[in-house]
Length: 70
Image (tube, rainbow, N blue to C red; front, side):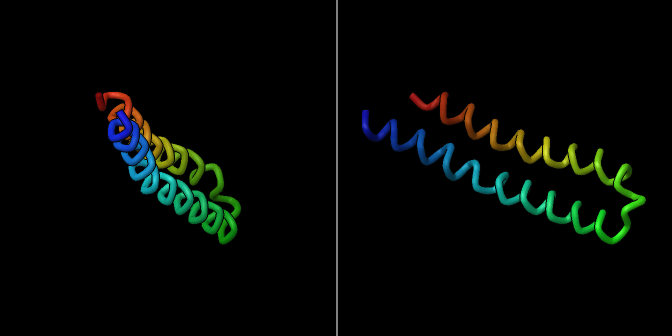
């Protein structure tokens, strides 16, 4: 039982490291882009949100895998 719990914890822990770093980098680059060209904020927002959603989907896949471990 303890090994199953450890496997679940590792699956969600390791599976969320990449998306967390990706979302941080997406946000940082978007803010940098808006800082350089404030008029382009509207054009930057939608692709930034889409990229963050795709990165977040990977964390959700890790969560699903963690729940499917028996």
